[in-house]
Amino acid sequence: MSVDQSDITKVALLARLKIDEADIPQYVDNLSNILGLVEQMSEVNTDDVVPMAHPLDAAQRLRADEVTETDQRDSFQALAPEVESGLYLVPKVIE
Image 1: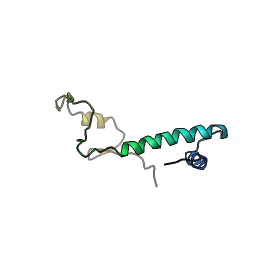
Image 2 (image 1 turned 60 degrees about the vertical axis):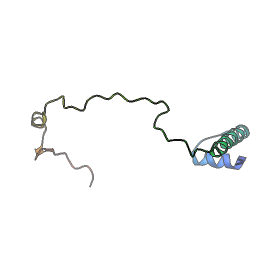
Image 3 (image 1 turned 120 degrees about the horizontal axis):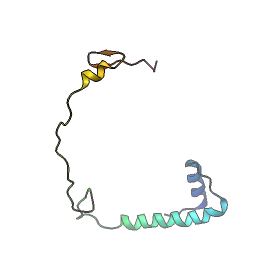
Image 4 (image 1 turned 45 degrees about the vertical axis):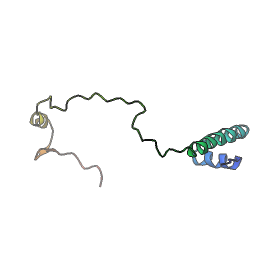
């Protein structure tokens, strides 16, 4: 895919970027090289490649899912200005 100066100008406008006119040819070359690499990578046959979540075959050590704290809802709600049926009542902010 070829990129020209008008493409760079349009992308810069959409991204709200200010690019100097003198730098546009460098952006054209860099973006063309990146898109060329993407085209090369899309030509690679990946039919027999299994998708992975992580490049290393490692297991994540996880802690046990156990309750470690006591239920303190009643003591916390005792400090609240307004509570009803176990819920905190707050002022309406959206009409």
